[in-house]
Length: 192
Image 1 (cartoon, helix red, strand yellow):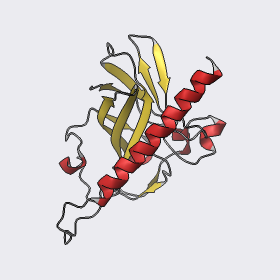
Image 2: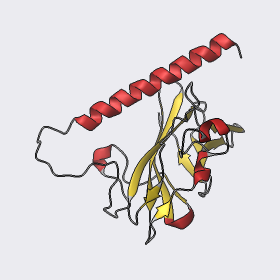
Image 3: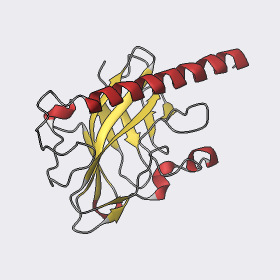
Image 4: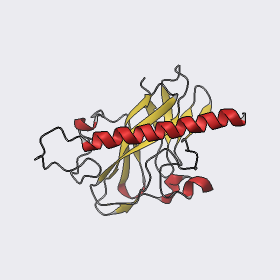
């Protein structure tokens, strides 16, 4: 791979990350006009329900449920290709246990560059059994994984929306296995 190609890919990844941040910022600031709605934010709720709200734009029935240690559960709600050649996997980490649980540091993986940026889902991989390929989470130009970061302690019943971004498998691939360290693996269907 040439340096010029690598630089273009990195610039594209940074541009995509900035664009996604701006979209999420605008979406988070738009409240729907009422102003008096006392509804809590969707970032972390203690409602105890295992279904994400339809307002978050995610399906009610998870594509997969991956069981983790200490009562943690990772529910995958969408896996969509975009025009830039990326696959974004969205979901919710939930503490299904009856006491506080810590998202294990192993979910960050074992790459020094990723671990240096704190707890994340950077160790996640997608396995395309049909194409015999493994896809790792994308990194930005500074080595930060394009996943939810800053994971830590979840109280009993608490949920936390998460995402992971990968290179998109070929369009002929409709299903992949998602593997996250310390969680069971699960098969997810790709849309788009």
